Length: 231
Image 1 (cartoon, one colour):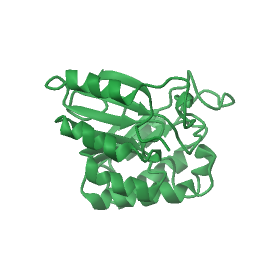
Image 2 (cartoon, one colour):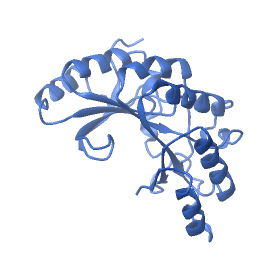
Image 3 (cartoon, one colour):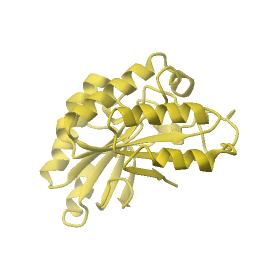
Image 4 (cartoon, rainbow, N blue to C red):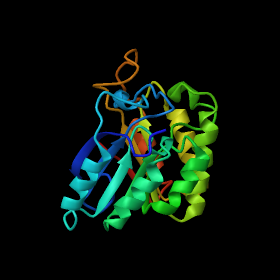
């Protein structure tokens, strides 16, 4: 097992991935799910064709002290790697806040990481009973929603977001998902329309919104103090 974090990509500057902060994003290698609409399929294997040395990334971050405010660990699925906690601690020692993008595919690992982060962008895949059609993994619903419960109990700042491909999440299922989130007290919900130019499952067609999408969007806005369709 590698003792250093495997990183397959870097965005050196973003204003979108950690609210109200200038940040960079580290794309951690590896994911245990195979979401059909995944637009970073090169990050799914535990080891990829492109790898950024952790020592080089730390050197990059040291040069950005005072310029960046936060470092976001994205993926892939960052919590797949045992080295994540130590990497987060090193980033925090440099004075950065720590963000995490995760679907909580390993609830126990996800819970352990929460003490190290300042903000989480949490990916909710589908309402219970419908996740496997997206992730390709049985029982992924249980893990996804169990990790969400741990996040809500933690007190860590967060947003919930869902990638929207209308072939995989129709209007009825989207409404069911949103209602469940609202019942759990989620304050901020973001929909991210799929990036269809590159998807893991090439059989997926275009994501065409139903005719009642404008009315559904208005209904969704009534459920949450903060609701956004991003992108």
